[in-house]
Amino acid sequence: MNTVRASSRDRLLDAAAELFYSGGVHVGVQALCAAAGVSKRSMYQEFATKDELVAASLERSGPRYNALFLPEEADERTPRERILHVFERLEARSGSDRYRGCPFVSTAMELKDITHPASDVARRFKQQLTDFFEQQAGLAGAADPALLARQLTVVFDGAGARAVVSGKPLAGLALATATTLVDAATGGSSGETGRPRLSPG
Image (cartoon, rainbow, N blue to C red; front, side, top):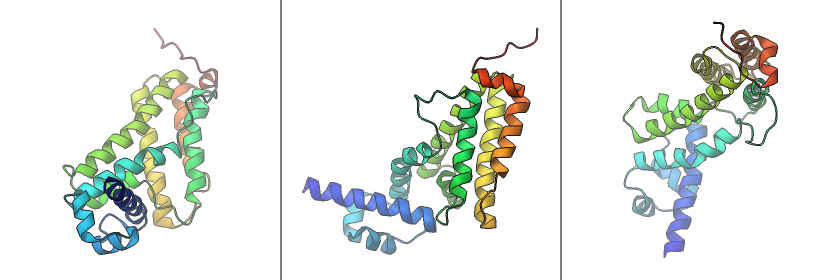
């Protein structure tokens, strides 16, 4: 019984991740259950509410989504290069006909409820990206790593939204914008060493 229930849960989470990303979190329960191959009764045995399923699905798919953009821990490129890697990956994904933007932003915007459990999941995963930017910005010598990190997150989210709205690849826009911000904040080539610059005075 436990094996069957685990299988049903996994199928629901996988189907939810795909359907919610492609069609939005307001996809109906009937369509979701049909895609997962489970009954409504089985779904509500696994998840008390659809809201709970939305949050659990985002929690499960979140690490995989972030991993599409973030460099590996053992990556030996400079902090500047590691930051720009994120935007290189975004540029590449924006050219896919399956790209629907950032699922964390999309979910939060659709729900329009900061108290929804899925909104909390979305914030936590977006914070992971901002934290990565801040860490690398500090290593690259930015005078205000936290500010640069927030700016880069805005570029990432805004560029993703533009790609979806326009229905076209970013064609270098996100990468060029991020490069300008990083170089302005770090003095350009100073970030190539990977060593923080000393602040004046």
